[in-house]
Length: 221
View: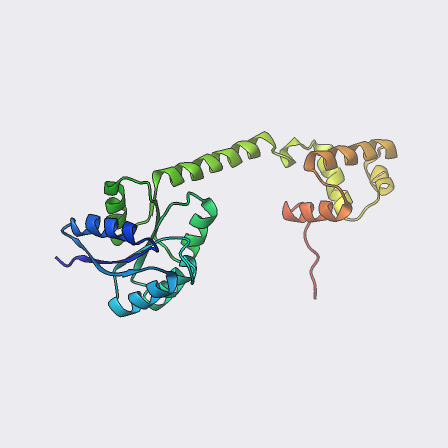
């Protein structure tokens, strides 16, 4: 069975030596080249055509993200696995955007890195458990926040009517006449709905109404 050909890209020689030793001990993997910066990683990938690149983040010169983008553009069959000390969601997102298949933290146990490499080579994706946990926690926080403030759901039927009519361009006086209410009552409804929706002017109100499909954009011929 052919071995997985690996390119190591990291600016720390001792770290590369340790990873090379780890990979060499695996019967189905071999290190075919090393690089100390992003530009060198692109060159070595062109020369050696690796199956997998272990890419550090924060190397000097060409950024690791741009290096990954170039490698994936030239050789889309080559997988890239970020191996980094940064447990940063922005780096993770950027890495996925440029075509990486995984994100492993450098303090991960050795078997975890080997498992990640095999998962990626089987066509899967891999995230270090700590990064995955951060993403799940962030998602839960957003869900809870959304549950606590279901803004449109807090509007009364009358407030929704007033919202629609305001967004359609009617004045408070016109709305009062149409709904057979006092101007003072309509003003109160307007104040309440804008407070609940955290809206501060007419333009925001119209934008919100269009977004929620309460009103439709006029057809432009």
